[in-house]
Amino acid sequence: ITISKFTKRKNNGDQYALGKCDCGVIKEYRLGEVVKGQIKSCGCSKLKSQEGLPEGKRRCNHCTQVKDISNFIVYKHPKWKDQVSTKCDDCLPDVYLIKTHGITLQQKQAMLDKQKQKCAICLIHLKKLSDAKVDHDHVTKKIRGLLCGPCNQGLGLLKDSSVVLRKAADYLDNKGVI
Image 1: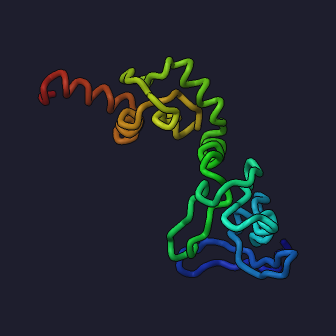
Image 2: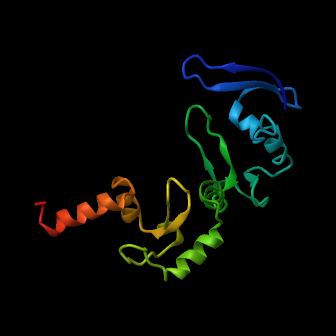
Image 3: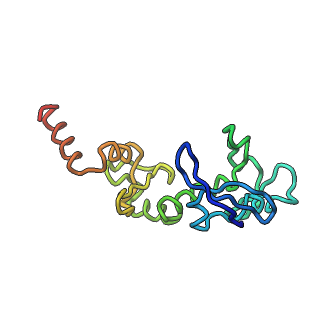
């Protein structure tokens, strides 16, 4: 992509770069994505990977396997006009984990095995890997462990604060009277 100028949106102040793709398409890209090198094309390179496939098939841009289109999410949002995901259902969780927590599904499974398939707080049995939520420190981004959904939400609602959590426990122990 060749950048020709930088712009700023008046409504929200976000910075954009006007760029031209190798295929000739000119469009705006978020400046942060351009600076980080996350933008490689207008999307045409992703389309090229789909050329020559039989009807109803799609190639996953992550694992590169050709699969039936039913193995891909179809986005129904009006902005995307029924756009099909570039990653198959099997790869989406792995890609999400890598982007958000820096771990793979295999590493998450190893953590769950180490916790004996149990939530680190309430010790409820976590039947599937998707039941285990990655708990992390929001300041350091360091992973603390795997929790069930309610325990993970509970920590978030209590602002990830041990002080607030202790006060909540004292409140419960005293049947509402502090």
